[in-house]
Amino acid sequence: MLSILAVAALGLAASGVASYVVQRQGVLRAIDAQLLHRVPELKTIASGKSSDAPPTSVDAVLRDAMQQMIPAANESILGFVDKKPALVPAANLPFRIDKDAALVDRIVAEAHPTQVVIGTAKSTLGTLRYLIIPVAVAGDPSTGLYVVAYDLDAELGSVADSFQTYIRVALMALALVGLVAWFVAGRLLRPIRLLRDAAARSSTAADLTERIPVTGRDDVSELATAINGMFDRLQDSARSQRRLL
Image 1 (cartoon, rainbow, N blue to C red):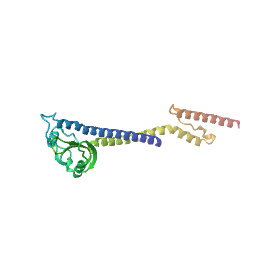
Image 2: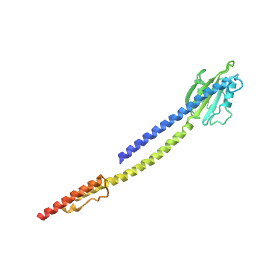
Image 3: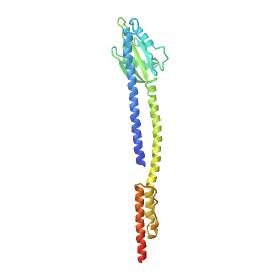
């Protein structure tokens, strides 16, 4: 029975871990896709295709972006002008990037003048997945950064909750498997125990009246029937010997 429980536990554990890893990777890929989707959106705003005329300054690009690109749940946005936090959306944000000075310094240090940067940081705000998009406008000497970040702890919370639920269900299933295995093993082994006890008691001819109850039609029941037949023959043989004496 212990081997049955061990195999069941191993199977449930492997299935649970695999499911957790797949779900977690799926969430992380979806977050990266959402972050990278901001790049073409910002390019559209900077080109003026979303307004009557192209913005003429970095500040104007960032302001238009703050108005048009609404942050999703567990997402925050911050605009930098000349390496300093300058603009945030008017919408209520789940967290403020500019509230963590160390994170602000890291963003400024990692930013590239012409390339998009994506990374992960552990901060006082939690574990964040962020994207840094450089912003530049011809004729404006200022430099800008459009930064968007996701709270990974919040995004992965549903995956962790699902895994905890799976653990509880798996433990209940394992307990049920153990109960069923104990019950089935008991029914299967009962005739064998009776056979052992009968054999132990049948050490003399007087004890050959012992028989094993047969209640089914499975292999164990057939074995018990065969043993009972053996006892019948032994008993008949013992009676024949007594008559000869």
